[in-house]
Image 1: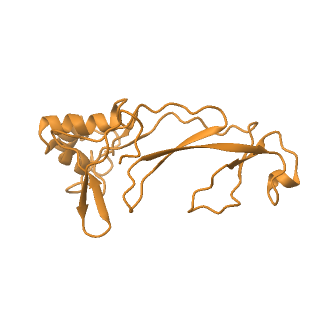
Image 2 (image 1 turned 60 degrees about the vertical axis):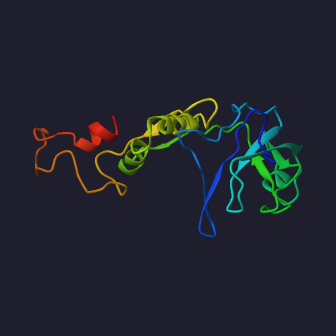
Image 3 (image 1 turned 180 degrees about the vertical axis):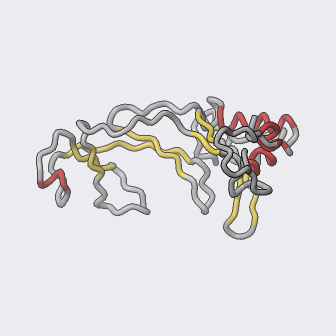
Length: 190
């Protein structure tokens, strides 16, 4: 049985050796998730993948609010924030886990989530039939998928390129008169 939310399509596993498994995404099928919805205040949603076969398995939980968690910064000092403790601690975490959240401190804003489109990733995507490409890209960028909203493109070659290349190999060309894009940039990354 699928531990997926209603409407989600479960992973169709393909095994490679004893510990390697991928979810099949082809021209006729690709696994999906329900749209991600922010959980209610004081609760969380966790998606877990593992070598044991979990693939974005969804679970929910709630936090206990405590201003006096023993043995923590919250227990020794009064903070404007509070200590939050999961009501059910996953087996791989210590039972006395305490997450300290100081709501008065703001560090950065998360603009989104995404991945890198390297030469190797682009070549593999482009090698698929068009319908499989559509399924694969929807599994990353659509509401039925991971809802990625950012993509990083390497500048020139990277460790996932077929060969090393730059945009201007002429020494001391500070005016970039010899600058030019490579086929990899216009055929794979555009």
